[in-house]
Length: 216
Image (cartoon, rainbow, N blue to C red):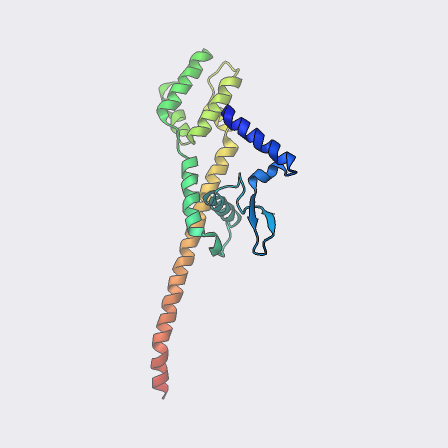
């Protein structure tokens, strides 16, 4: 924050205190009612409230997790579930964006040099990198930072050693994507059922007059 902006904010807060208004009123909107009376009305979206898209995405994630494994489903149409699923699935895929193999090899090599350790043989190293490259890039970076600061053994860390540092977060992200995939399939099933029901009603509507005329 610049010095001038800080001074302006400080002056505004001081003025509010002198007039008996709380500094929290900076985040409120003052409007006049139809009756001409003034009232402090808190806006529906005060400062710090998540954007509508973020809120919709989070609600959809919670909804998909709560319905995981359920044989049937009720669609919360008011939440814009189809749009929310698309947003949530996009974020889930982004959170699982894999680490680059070259980056993994570079960091593992630096770890070996720093701790004066021997790298595994070529096949074993290739297998390790193949597994690690399926992990999200940010989780691998976090695991490596922890490993860099805490590793104290005279052997090179295994793939399992590194995985243990991010196992819970990785499982949570993969489960979230699985929940969303299941919710998408349920939504498709519900939409197909709606189409089939509509077609069935149309067929019954066409055959009903014919049966009535035959009976006459």
